Image 1 (cartoon, rainbow, N blue to C red):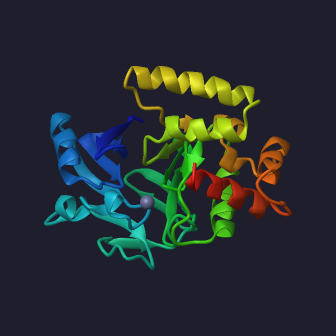
Image 2: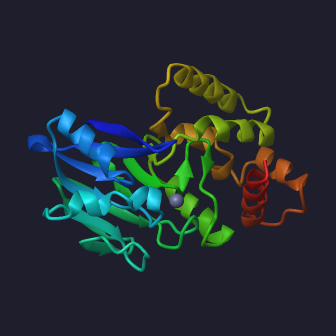
Length: 252
Ligand SMILES: [Zn+2]
């Protein structure tokens, strides 16, 4: 399946899935015009929208795209975002648009945050929860919630591709190297990402297997990450490791 990033704003990606019969599904359309332009250029008709969480850079285009149409809008329940035609809590298995979509509840960045996993295409659309080389800021939830959410993403098959919503990889990796300077897999990822960015190419999707080796926010149980966190404050639990690293990144 063709899954294409539509760039929006400074560093957002709106993922567009090309379905059969010239239909398309978009994830987190913060900017309606970017989507409309892409759909027209590729002779696609919008069939559906998936929303991961309520932030405006993920939802701002939904009304304009869906108004007066029968586009299906799937969004989180108990959310400030009220533009969904069908809400989901997490845990559902949806059969929509010819796809089998598992909804995962991943609170932390926001309380309403969900992710969409499509096993047959090895794809997770995880919004601002897991990024390549990093993770979202913990705005509404607790560090414990965020780590548990990342743990559920880490448990997906290693071949899963990470379709997150921002091109933050290069900055994330600068921090990752500060936390984990002796990690060879991380150094290799830095080189790859640097090449891609030099050619103005997206660094996404990344592979979960590579994230598990290089992303400090998936490695709260790795001795190198624990040792780095220990230098900031005494560490007792996996949640402590995650919190210390996340707070360190916030002021990096
Ligand atoms: Zn967000």
